[in-house]
Length: 187
Image (cartoon, rainbow, N blue to C red):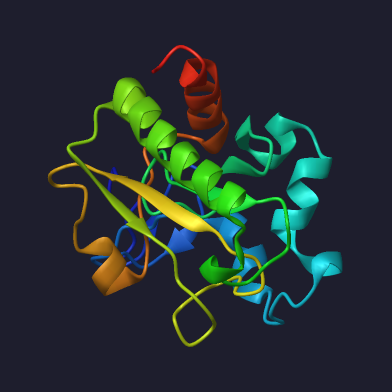
């Protein structure tokens, strides 16, 4: 045994657990297991996380702002820190289902969310998008929602492509607090 705990090719860490090292780094994301395991699509109001969220506290649901007809919430599985979703309170699947009033508030909340995220974290760009229907790529096709994804130069690396893993630099609670606290002060 060497002074570093190596026996042959095996290595023991500080906990004296055996293992054979390889070239991979590990990014542990156990919180994603619930998302990966959920295989049934959301169909109605009874199993819709976007319908359930407004019934809980803002902190519990990661809501950053509640409007009259729609609200803004953090994505539980963000592409980047500050990844927000704008959702109507009504359980509707398609953008064309919004009323004129809902469409106006939906758009205004999107603009405000972009301004707030710019003020809080200074992204150099955004991706905005709505995936309509399962075929269109919507993870929750039954309840309309728009993604607002802040972007920075160099925010993408090989991990999502090679390892199917995204490194997020802030906790959801911290991001929610920053965005919610700045919401009323940003014009």
